[in-house]
Image 1: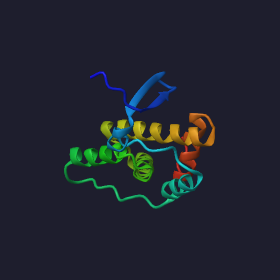
Image 2 (image 1 turned 135 degrees about the vertical axis):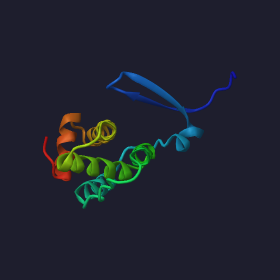
Image 3 (image 1 turned 90 degrees about the vertical axis):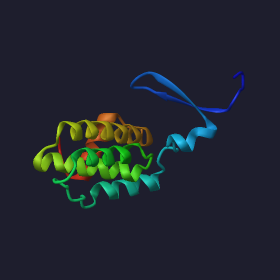
Length: 137
């Protein structure tokens, strides 16, 4: 409409994509600042903690929707819980196709943020996450 609004400009190196988000929409979009060292320690505690028990009965679509909600919540702690649980479930008894795709998405998000905060490669961040979760590739 011809109006100028202040925006956050986010560059995503993996896809070479630039996203502009108006500042007034930042909270609604779930955008938050990168983790601080204190929050990174909290995240590593979550990754090391005991896993949630896997619910095998019931509606699997609802379970996957809940996992997806946690991934998209913008909460680094919920994202950490999803990655921890799915990595451990994968090692114990395997994942459904949908769960495997959600694990790939969630671990990618988490690894890229850990890599950015710590100044390391994404693969090194994945290895670090796996070591806290207690699973190796």
